[in-house]
Every structure is written in structure tokens, then in C-alpha cells.
Image (tube, rainbow, N blue to C red; front, side):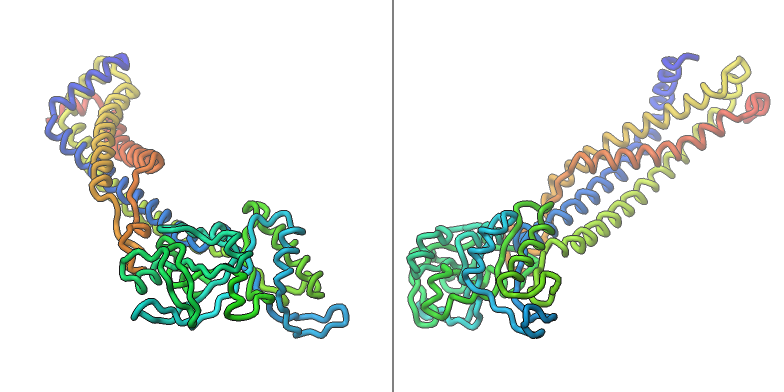
Length: 419
């Protein structure tokens, strides 16, 4: 009995019981399809959650002045730290690990008016680099530039929700709005940000103006906070240490005094997001594996039925010198062929189903956004297919090896007498 002969015999046996074979393959295929869909959902959930978290800013770091917790240089503890606008220039010049930095002033309760529509909003006075730091994209018009800042132009960029409230869907660019009684020209509207992290009013509901233009409302010498990002995630910790040391030098507090300046790296919360995503993916994988296991039980039952039906045939093969290994190989080959058929059917069904589903609502409803930015997109990845086929192979072989071992261990005399 050669391996070619075993393969031909396995094909012949499956063709003879074609209805049973097809039913078993479809059962396994359904399990694979469910597994692929569930894994794709888990991957889509992780991508949507990560995108919503990083929308606040790619590797965003906030630097907030607090009060000193230790005495230093003859200064008392509990002294309030107050940033100076010159600190921003000094940090950018002396800390090469900072890629982009912007001071920020963000007063709330600013009265915004256009025509008959009026409401309160939060104002953000920022540098042009702010859009890079905060992952701001434009849906209409342009962002603030350096000329706007240096010439203190009265220009404003509206958040998507602010523009919707003021203009009710009409074009906002080149229109005039009034902020606390002062006229500003709208130069742009930001794209909707579906974000689950923030440190103030959501960007969608704010108005952005050049930092130096804030002089029409108040003093710009003392920014509220600094927002910045490092040149790379690997350099984040070193950059934070250098910023703390430089601010300690400027404001006379030791770098070890972490109470003096709060430096908040949003990336540290990423572990919470990845943990949530991992939990969902594990749950989806577990449910999918259970579905595949049910298909494996069906395969085991069919193979056991095949062993019982062919008991006398097995006895004849052993009586004329058929080895146990060859009989074991024949039944494992049959099981493997059914597994392969089920896998191909399942992957095809999974691809068709995910293509038909496309996406599922997730965060859009919470932000009243219909753009689909916060949806879960079911894209089948190579890893999802590989994992599903791997689980199918494991389940299928476990289900097939028990009947195969039973067949190989039959006593030839008892098998020949079986009726």
C-alpha cells in the first residue's frame, strides 16, 4: 500500500459517501466562516478603538504648571509655577527631542455669534504646529499659518460641531463670526474627530485662533499649558526628562519635584485601550473556536461511522498484511481532505459575509457622526485566515485521529467476523 494508493482510496471513499462528506465539509465550513467573521470583528474593534484614542494626538504630551512640592534655591515649597511664552521658545531650542510644540490658552464661556445663532464655546489660542500635534485634519478651508500668528490676524477655524450649529450646513469659510463682540473671519472647518480621549472641550465644539491674536481678549505672556510631541515614541521618556529638567532650570525647582510641573503622556493610557481590544478579540476567538469544535464533533461522528461500516474491510486489509500505520494514514487522509474542503468553503463564505457586512456602527452614534469614521470595519486579514485554518486543522485532526486509531487497532479476526 503506497501513499498514492492511500490517497486514491480516500478520494474513492469520500466520493462514495458524497452526501455525508459534503454535509460534514459544510458544517466545518460554517464554523470557519463564523471564526473568520468574529476575528475580523475583533480586529476592526481594535482598529476603531485605537483610531478613536489616537485622534486626540499622535503621542500627545501635555505639560501643565502646578505648585512646587519641595524647597529649592531659597524658594518655599507650595510655590505656584507660571509658564512664560518665552519658555516655549527655549524648550524648542534646547530640547532637540521635541518634534513640535505649541503653547495653548483655552478659555471657556466665549460667546460665539453668527446672524441669529448664538451660543457659548471654548476658544483655543494656539501655534500653527498645533494641527500636527493634535491630528487635526481640515474638511474645508485651511489651518492657521505663521503669518496669521505674527500679524495677529483675526481669523478663526471652527470645529465641525461648532460650524454645524452656526451655519446649519451652509458653507462657513470666508464668513464672519463674532467672538465676545469681536469680529473674526472663518478660514477653515476641521474634520469631525471621533475621539475617546480629551483634556478639555472636544475639538469638534471649539474655535481655534492664532495664539498672538488672543491679545484682543487677554494677556498672551502666560500660556496655560504646553502641548507637544516627541520625535519618536522611543525618545518619549528622554524628552520628558529633558523638558522637566529645562523647566526646573527656568523656574528654579529640582527636576525630581514632579508636583511642580505635571507632564501627562497620553500614550500611557494606550495600555487600557489595547487591553480592552485584546479582551474582545479573545472573546471572539473563543466563541469562534467553540463553533469550530462543534464542527469537529460532527467530523468525529462521521469518521467513527465510517470505521464501523468498513470494519470487515479493515479486517481484510490487516489479514493480507496491511500495516497499522497504513490504515491509520488512510483514515487520517480522509479526515484531512474533509478538513481542506471545509476550510476552503469556510474562508470563501467568510470573505463573502465580511464584504456584504462591510462595517458596523460603533462610536459614531455617541458623537452624532454619520461619516463612518468611528465604525467597525470588517476587513479580513491574512492573520484571520491563518488563525482560522490553524484552529480548524487542530480541531479536525483531533476529531479524525480518534476514529483512525480505533480502525488501526482492530483485531483482524474480530473485524472479519463483524456483522
